[in-house]
Image 1 (cartoon, rainbow, N blue to C red):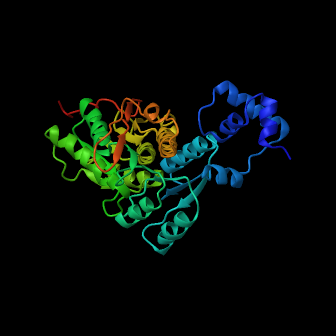
Image 2: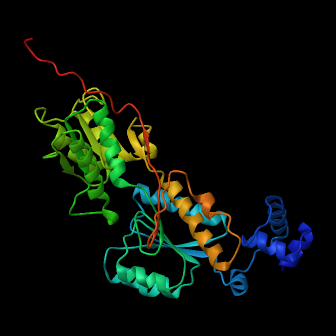
Amino acid sequence: MSAIGDVARLAGVAKATASRALSGRGYVSTETRAKVVAAAQEIGYVASPNAASLVTGRTQSVGVIIPFISRWFFGEVLESVEQALLDQGYDMTLYNLPPESLERDRVFDFFLARKRFDGIISVGVALSEREVEHLHRLGRPLVGIGGPIRGTTTIEIDDVAAARLATEHLLSLGHRDIVHVGGSQVDEMDFHVHSNRLRGFQAAMMAAGLSVSGCFYSAEFTMPGGYERGLAILGDPRRRPTAIFAASDEIAFGLILAARELGIRVPTELSVIGIDGHPYAEMFRLTTLAQHPRAQGGLAVRTLLAELATKDGTKLHTRRESTAPDQTDTDGTSDSIVLATNLVIRSSTSAPRARVTHGS
């Protein structure tokens, strides 16, 4: 069986250098790392994770908790987290976290506590105070995506600002009869995504001197949800708006399909804008606020590994490099990295068509 010493001799480096190159711990030049990896592959060397754990105190494993797997945003984040971890030689254990329940308690009280992880990433989960306290007691780095978690570095977008910008885009085109189709306030997502996007819409409308009464309709955050609500909103021509701000791209897709079925031309007779940056947005020619979930996932991994390096006293290369110029660090009990969304204008939005007065 091949050993690390064999890899080092074949690569022409010291044993410690070969170990650092294969473990990802400590600095090794790109050229040297490539030589060591090639040597390991040539002789079929595979590091024993148990042996490495005894030496380094690391398991090279990260726990990830997430509320949904099938929904687009969460799937995109999850794929990017997994790829970024694999690139750094880390394994991932996934927990699909249910709402408050005995199963959720078991994840925190048993799995996350008794299984050995180097760190934990929480994706879109608003943790209770008890859960936060429990994770902090484990003494492992924790990074969150989606909203603030006490004592934790978190990565998020400003949902209020994004919704306001989307609505202001419609207002800038000349629309005044605008409605918002978003998530139900009763079936609220974690971190108040539904209500925050409604707040941003209302803020933009009121700043323009427009009423927000009767301008909100709830829908599931899915294409079928948008389609069903679109048929109801657009079916009566006497009450039909000239523009709709959808709280997600998938809702927007459903609205566009409903408009097409009713013979309503987009954007000539109806403008539609969403939030997400979904890959199907190009196909639907949808104007949207892109929030880059893959970038959020990659940044979460880099931040977690940087905290691990700091904890181990390893020279830190990634934390400041991982920060983007559009993020904001805030003082206090948590470090919130707020990533900017960007407006991507396509052909689903335009100025409203001039109303025709018959008999003039």
